[in-house]
Structures are given as structure tokens and as C-alpha cells.
Image (cartoon, rainbow, N blue to C red; front, side, top):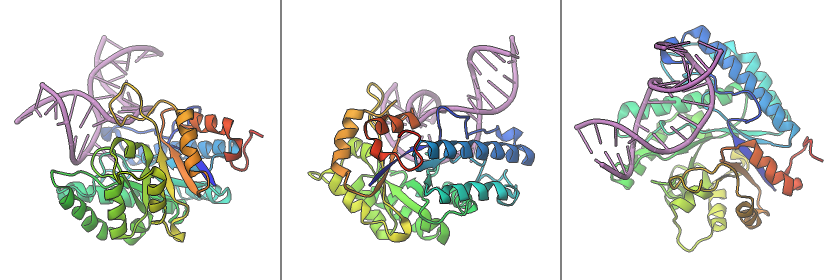
Length: 302
DNA sequence: CCGCGTCAAGTTCAT
DNA sequence: ATGAACTTGACGCGG
């Protein structure tokens, strides 16, 4: 069975990404914004339940400056009840969430400071998911990082840095092929080396192909084999090219025709599919419209 | 109160 | 060597 999800924002609901400037960041402000963001997140999750969406990516900006030294607030404690309530909602409704640190989180950087900051960012992500009381099926997705003129050395730096991560972070971490540096083939090799799951991104794979002659389906089966029972259902990412923008730009909305074709190749698999498109939940509903059987329990659309 | 320049963070590529 | 793009919306200052 295939389940669909979307990332971070619901275009019809208040933003879960309230933030402030570094110079205005006080403990009170950080907690206040975090409260707002968690409230907005809860609303999105309720919307998801009402519309049969069980897969969602939680914004990395939920806790402002989550891994920055300016944030010395004990937010897991202060926001504990709120975190519990959201976590319980996710568990009770069989939902699956993930997080995905952005482009500035580069674990394999040769600059120690950058790599340390990346590790701290991963620890923050794990703290939040842990704060919700969610197990290791709720993942943190990361790209391998930069190449710096030597892909082999860069891959080695990733595996070395990974080895030094705290165990709880290791249990949540999964890696994804990107559109420039690390192909699906390269990421699958690294995932095998350090024994973590791989997320196959179909769009990035189209931008930066590998495994010549093999179908996406073939690669997805390899990637799925890196997931164990504790990791939960394998995940993949799906998007289309925004025509007219640079190669790799995510499309405004899902191309239903292209997705239909892709869906036919994977429909017999157990997968969570994250749609990475600008119009977020609208594309999920667009697919549900033509495939009502994909809408999960609780869907208002009958 | 509105509009627009700016924002924690890194890497790559173009000039 | 320097700067823009990436991606992206929300902040918050200045008028």
C-alpha cells in the first residue's frame, strides 16, 4: 500500500514557521514562537487526519534556533505537555512524521566547526521527535553533503562523522540522493556501509542519474531493502521539474499524468511517498481525487 | 500600517 | 576572488 505525504506547510492553515531575528531572540520570545509553531503543527495534523493524510514532514524551524547556542531554553521541559499531546495524536492516529534539515546542515564538511554544527542540528531534530515520544520509525532525512573536489574522501568523511553521532540520532538518520553530488548508487553504497536506510528521491535521480539501465523501481527495491522493522515502512520522495527554472527546482504542483505513470510501477509496494511540491497538501488531494483508495482512514472524502 | 530589504547556517558555480 | 543561487517565507525596520 502506498501512502502520500507533504512537507512542513499546509497552504490553507497558519504557518508553523514563526521565527525571529537573532538579535531579538530572548528565552521568552523563543518559547512563545515555539508554542505558536506547535499549535500550528497540531492544527495541520488535525487537518491531515480529517483528509486522510498520514505522512507529514515537520518543519526544522519548529523550535527557533533549535541548535543555536543562543537557545539555552529548556524547551523539552517547558513545552512538555504540548509535545506529549501532539505525540499522542500522531501515535493514536497511525501517522508517520519525519524531519529534514536544510542545506546548511553539512555533516561531511572538512571544516570541523561546520560538521559540529551539523551534528548539533541533528541532535536538536532528535530531541524534538523524542520530545513527542515518537520511536525511530519517525526519521531524520539528510543529504550526504558536499564533494569538495573528491567524492571518495567526502563520502569517507560522512561515514566517519556518522560514527561519532549519538546512538539515538543514528537510529533516526536516513540519507537521500541529491541532484548534484551523490547519486542513488553512491548513497546506497554509503547507506550499506554504515547500516542506515536510504530514501530514494525519484526527482533527484532524474536530475543526476545512476545505475544505468536500471529502472527507478529496481532502485527503490534496493533502497527498501536497507529498511529494517525498527525503521518502519520505506520512504521515497517524489517531485517534478518546475519547467523553465533551473534543473532540480521542485514543481509548483504535481504532474498528475507523470505521477500516474510512476504510481503504476510501485503500487504493489509498501511505501510512504513524500510529495515535494510547492502547493503541498493540494497535490496530495489532487491525487486522492483520482485515486480515492489512497486516502487513509478518517478522510472526509468518502 | 505597508512594503521591501533582510535573515543562523554552507557549497557550488558563474563571472 | 567575489557574489549569486539555492529556497522561501516571515520578520521587522523605515517611511
